[in-house]
Image 1: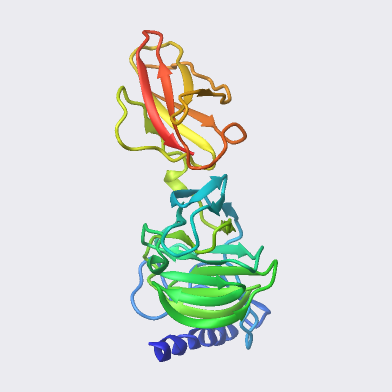
Image 2: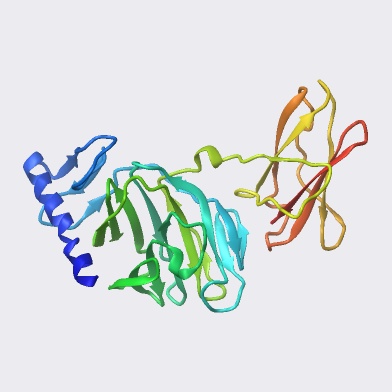
Length: 319
């Protein structure tokens, strides 16, 4: 397995040679293949490799998006930052992003090293779990030491990191590049048609983690949840501190009265005011910003909305 993986490192050298033939200038653009392809190495539109005879990779996408987390466990969340509260160990803390790298889309994630004493793993995956061995394409930082893992299998160790180093994992076509400060330390062939999300698994208690990406939330940016007359066993996870909910109005106009109750204490908590006008019969959508008013700590709350006809609707959420 290790021999095969290291042979794939030659892919970058081959690409750089192709680049040199295509263009004699210092920054080169490789444009090969089409929206559907089979076999060979596909380099997507806008992919840039800087120079030849070097291993410096420049990302083809310039936009930067903060991550939004879901399905997190063993952590507290404040905006796009998660902090491990569970005890030391694998499998009890992590999160998955709403951000998705679409099929046949180039994109990257970038982690700015801000501590060297913790152990954690992050990367890209199609899996929706946060176990150590579930992240398909991962970098582990273990007290500052860099390793690459594929679904829990060690691929190789690649030196150490320093504070403020930038570690990228970037998919360009069907090649995945791992870089530190834009210097490639590993690359492998992947399926460009996979839809990938950001996964993180945290080992050390107290680890604080945030990451940026070039790909956004797409259609999941505002997943509105419907209020119901009776609560069920589920709960909603706010996105980037915002609670999105929808109310199916029974009349053409009216006003919603609302409150948020702490499920542990039963107390009504203070939240910002929102426009609660029922604009029309049917679908009405609202956005409640929780940041700065509720302390993120994995607590459960219930949003209660009461109509002018004194009918109440509910939504349980965790924040």
